[in-house]
Image (cartoon, rainbow, N blue to C red):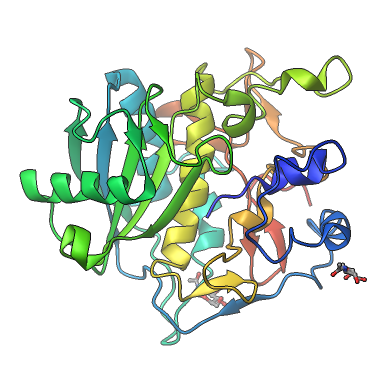
Length: 334
Ligand SMILES: *[C@@H]1O[C@H](CO)[C@@H](O)[C@H](O)[C@H]1NC(C)=O
Ligand SMILES: *[C@@H]1O[C@H](CO)[C@@H](O)[C@H](O)[C@H]1NC(C)=O
């Protein structure tokens, strides 16, 4: 799940319309405000528990579905991020790296003691450039998109290791996109796809709502002169650089909770708070309450916190660390 908790922390006093009352923490404003102080520190309010289901412990195969019109350079940027997660694909990038960042995710294990795999590869790609299900998708039609890809291209049906990642182009609207979510993950229904497959969707918010889903590379207009200025995107593309953090968030969650019965906080399995949700909006030491934390800038003033393959840089949110009981990332200063 991807709930805009960050915006909730920051703007709760201004507007309740940006909140999404589908998780146990955000239902109580008092606890949310005290929760925003817990980042990096005490974690008494976070009740992250394991619910006995599987995690993705075998080498993970990502099946990419490009929905709509995608430029090869944007595809390459996203693939470079995905291929930076695993150290098996390339020479190690300098620290702090994307694969260092995934180490936090690999701290989660299932009931047999098998940890989430650190080996991730792109196992297949499918281009739906003719918008087979139109320019507006719902949660259910996204499953049809996956079914179309699985049937028309010999994508393996990969129940155990697969993540089907649907990425929609800037001109595709998606149910709840921008208003409530920037991405989500779930699993497909056998009645719709023929199989139960973990999947995630992330949209390119470049033109629709960069100030919501590509923050901090765009900031809401109503923040006026008083708020923080937009930061420069590490690869110069607000929409795609913004997507990459959301993709990281969703991959971390689908790996630790692929069938929505493994790692999450909260009592309601239909609205779990997962290991990415707990750290949304946090990218460095000292972050919280609307501040992203201490991150780096390159010579051109572009903001990043992780190094990837082929000299790439990325800005990706932190993940909840179950051992520290705090949000963590490899660019932490302490
Ligand atoms: C909200 O949480 C606070 C602190 O945990 C508690 O004191 C208060 O009673 C809660 N309010 C509601 C409406 O649940
Ligand atoms: C596997 O998960 C356990 C439990 O969180 C953790 O203590 C251990 O360090 C992890 N192992 C690796 C290799 O990440």
